[in-house]
Each structure stands twice: as C-alpha cells, then as structure tokens.
Amino acid sequence: MRYTLSLVAVLAFIWLANSGHYTPLLLTFGLLSIALVVFLARRMGLVDRESQPLHLSMSLPGYYWWLFCKIVQSNLEVASCVWRGRQSIHPASARLETKLQTDLGRVLYANSITLTPGTVAVELEGDEILVHALNAGGLEELRRGEMENRVRALEE
Amino acid sequence: MIDPVLAVLSGLALALGCFFMLSGAVGLLRFPDFYTRMHAAGVTDTLATFLIVGGLMLLAGWSLALLKLGLILLFIFFTSPTASHALARAAQHSELRLPEADRQREREAEPVVESEPERIAEADALNADRV
Image (cartoon, one colour):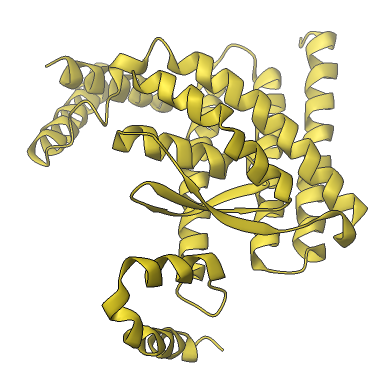
C-alpha cells in the first residue's frame, strides 16, 4: 500500500509539473491517467520494494551527492585526457568481484560505474562485473572499493 | 528582471557546459577505439548536460519551466547509464568483444568450449549485414 501511494505521489508530481493547465476537466483527465498507470503497474507486479526504494529515501541523497562529486572529478580527468591526446590514455578492462548481495545494490553499483565517465560496466554476471576503463587507474580505484562500500552501506 | 548575479552564474554554467560538450565531441573524434570513444561520450551526457540544463534552470526562475528542466535532468541521469550499458553490451556480440569476456565463459562452462567457434561464427553472421 505504501508503495502504491508513493507511486501515485510521484506520478501526480510528474503530471502537475508537466501540464501547466489546472482546469477541472484536465485535472480529472490527469487523475484518470494516474489511476490507469497505477492499475497497470500493479497488474504487472511492478509496485514493490525494488521499484519504489522507500527504505533508501533517507540515505540515497547523501550517496547521490558523493556520486555527483565523483562524476565532476572524473569528468575533469576525462576532459583533460581528451585535450592531452592519445598518449595520455591507457585503456584497460577487467572483471571485478563484488560482495554486494541484493540485485538493487548490484544495479546501483553498476550504474554508478557507468555514470562516472572513464569507467563503463559492460557486463554484470553473478558476482562479477566486467568493467572497461579509460585509464588503468580507474580500475584500481574501483578495486579499492570506496564506491562499493558506500553502496553496501545503502543495502543495510 | 533577472537578477544580474543569476544571469552571470547561468552564463558561466552555459559556457562551461559548452566547453565540456566540445571536449566530449573532440574526444569522440580523437580517441582510438569504440570503448574509449564511449568514455568521451560520457562527458557530454553527465557534467556537460548538468551544466547546460542547470544554467537554463537559473534563467528560468521560479516557474513551471524550472520543474520541467529538473525532470529532464533527472531522466537523462537515469537513462544515460542504461544506454551506455546497452551499447557496451551490444559490442560484446561483435568483433569488438573484450577478451576478458571470453575467458570467463570458458572457465565457467567447460563442456561448451567446442561451441566457441560456432559462437564467433554466429556473431559474424549477425554482423555480416553491418559491414
């Protein structure tokens, strides 16, 4: 029930933010479309802990802020590699083991890897993630596991 | 009408965003192969997008446009890693396949080793029309 309510709230926010027309007729249409989407999502079994990670709503903003700083930092690195030319890059790829237990944690981790420029998660199979990095240093940093530890802290 | 401080800030953000967009584009042309080019493209859809949309948000002021720009930013940040991953994953089905990906398959499924050439042939067949 909590998840349904949060889905309704999210959809209502998206509808209101995108519409800009607040006449009774259009609001009714909006309400109907939200009801239809919620009905479909429930029928498809999509409304659960995984699609609406409410338990993370407290800790996720902190993680996103850390990730954002990381993204800015690695953007600067990649941009400087671009201007310094080919000799400044040393592409490498490797399979990294992950100790993350939940699917949600693994997906969050792999997406974070992809979102930071300079590293891309190519394949996620079981406990291993195949990562391609622009510089071997990027792989080293992932092996040190700061990002993984932060995602693990979210899992618990 | 618009606060001069906001105007300067948004101008700065837009200019920086343009610079990173340009960096991404130059990297796309300069880098040697598919994967490294993907990293260059990553610059355009993270920081560059953030700076440009952020600069526009500062210009928009408190209005509906602000919310819409915020939603655009949110959706880009959620979809771009998925798109990058799909791209990299698709490359695994072609001759661009990373060697690390193969080693894992062999270790994992010993009896299927004979079918390795078959799989490569299959990948070739899939790519035949794209060459």
